[in-house]
Amino acid sequence: MKRNGFILIVLFLLAHVSYAGGGWPQPKGKGYFKLSEWWVISNRHYTEVGLLDPNVTNGIFNTSLYAEYGFTNRLTGVLYFPFFSRAYFNNTVSGTTGEVIIPGEAINTVGDTDVGLKYGILTKGPIALSATLTLGLPLGNNSGGSAGNLQTGDGEFNQLLQLDAGKGFRIGKVDAYANAYFGFNNRTNDFSDELRFGIEGGATFLNGRLTAILRLFGVQSLNNGALPSELSNSTSIFANNTEHLSFSPELAYNITDKWGVSVSTGRALSGRLIFANPSYSVGVFVKL
Image (cartoon, rainbow, N blue to C red):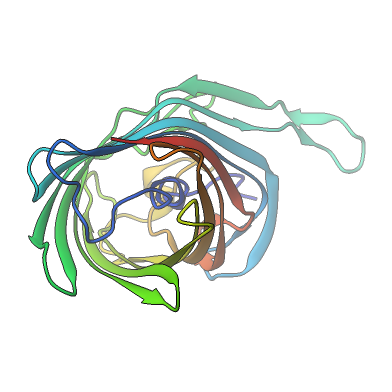
């Protein structure tokens, strides 16, 4: 069995979506900063044809900083920096003799990093519309471990252009919002380009202290690059042509007007070449 050849760009997508943003840029001099821990441990995956198969238990943990800062009322800088990323897989054990066939391994490095600029096209009126250019920097390790089969990055430089449209409204006495986005991700090093899309909605309770959010998002590969087996060996932690449709609920609680905490989870409803187990995240954020 190809032990890790199915694993996934969606790891980092699931990590990225659980933050501020949407169609609204940050006002000048204002910002949002979040320190979070995100992880997934998986013993099964979606195959190339979308079926579920078991695999040797794999895991990845990202300790990351996410930041948004308003340079002007329309232009916002965005950073996602996983400054500590741990990837591992367990021992491969014979089901007959109990003998360890392949010993488990782990690596600890930084992860692939995103830097971007968001521009507010429409900042007044009923709809907030923004465009974001995100550059994916291959700072992670794409060939760690004794066999080069552990990764905290994919080794390719990508450019994602995304449009977000958001609207705030009230449901009775509850403040709420909705946002939708669509993006095109241009990838290098023979990785296939991608379409990314999603919708989300949120509402605040307890006098604005508690925000509940639900996201539905996906990735569609254009299959215009190399085959997954041509870009990694049979135990690579990342795969080309990853596809998925996922949902992610989140709760964020404002302890004060500036400081807060959040918890979230994410799961693929369907997919190809991705983990089937859920991811989890906890974080602390501050708003300027």
